[in-house]
Image 1 (cartoon, rainbow, N blue to C red):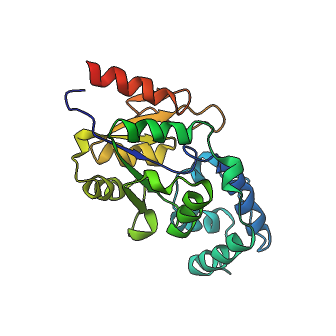
Image 2: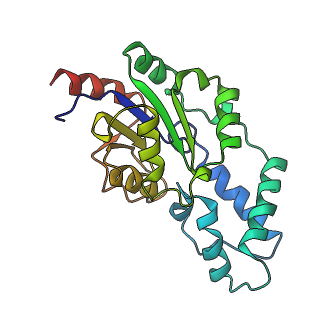
Length: 221
């Protein structure tokens, strides 16, 4: 790396909290109530996605003309509130100490997630991680979230850094594409379960805490 790294921007789901299987089952159970199935859609399609971009696919696969995207979106928001998840139990074991390491070493820390701000805030409050973040950005604030680059461009600007000074920590193909298109270096948490294409990532991490060593190595080069 030719630029000194000054900022780290994290994705949330699949990086800080292992939520993807819970989300998939919740979506599956919700859609079943309307006679809709997602069995034909690979789970990797959902990972890192803004659900606004998924409803058209669900309706198309099911050849459904009865329900609108707006209706499903509104009903699903209510369903999520009625079926919350326990972020504390799904928190990555390395998350807190990794964030503490970054703070001690004066990195600016951002969060750029496709999730709604309500869910982001709930995760940060319940896990007591909010204090570590200098910038928190939700995909709902953009017309199109990941894989479009705007969310990462905004997060970097919030940190008052350049993309070349930042590393994105991602897991999903859409998230990696988004950060890459925004000009950030991308380190991906290695996927071993969902068949996610992570080829665009600059490097992979076996676990979250591995980034601390890699950062130390990069900065000493």
